[in-house]
Amino acid sequence: MNMKMIKMAVFGLVLLTASVWAADSGVAERIKPVGDICMAGDDCAATVKPVVAEGTARSGEDIYKKCVACHATGAAGAPKLGDVAAWAPRIGKGMDVLYASAIKGFNGMPAKGLCFDCSDDELKATVDYMVEKSK
Ligand code: HEC
Image (tube, rainbow, N blue to C red):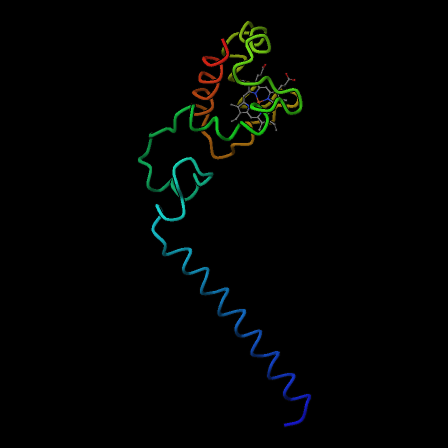
C-alpha cells in the first residue's frame, strides 16, 4: 500500500464510523422510553403528545414556563408576571381581548407566545394563570 491508499482507507474508516455513530444514536433516541428523554416541564410536548390522552390539556401554570423568556424578565416590554400595575390596564381590556392577543399576537407579543404546539384552550388557561397571579 502506498501513502495515498492508506489515507483513503483512513478517510473511509472515519466516514464509516461517523455514519454508524449517527445511525446508532438516532436509533437509541427513538427506542428510549419517553420518560427518559422527556421530563415533566421540559419543552417536549411533541414527544409526549401521543401519550397524552385526547383532550387532556396542559395547565396554564405548565404552559407559562414557555412564556417566561419574556414575561418573567419584561423583555421587549412584556408585562411581568405579578406586576399588578403593568397588568391592570390589560385586564381592563377584558379577557377575550387578552386571549386574542395570546393566540394571534399583539405588537411585541408573538402569536401563541411562540408555543406553537399549544392549543387555543391551553393558551387561554395560561392567560388565566398569568392574570390570576398579577391582580
Ligand atoms: C418573545 C417574547 C414573548 C413571549 C415568548 C411571550 N410573550 Fe406575551 N407579550 C410579549 C410582549 C412584548 C407583550 C406586550 C405587547 C404590547 O403590549 O405591546 C406581551 C403581552 C402579552 C399579553 C397581554 C396582551 C394584551 O392584549 O395586552 C398576554 C395575555 C400575553 N403576552 C400572553 C403570553 C403567553 C400566554 C405566552 C406564552 C405562551 C407569552 N405571552 C409569551 C412578549 C412575549
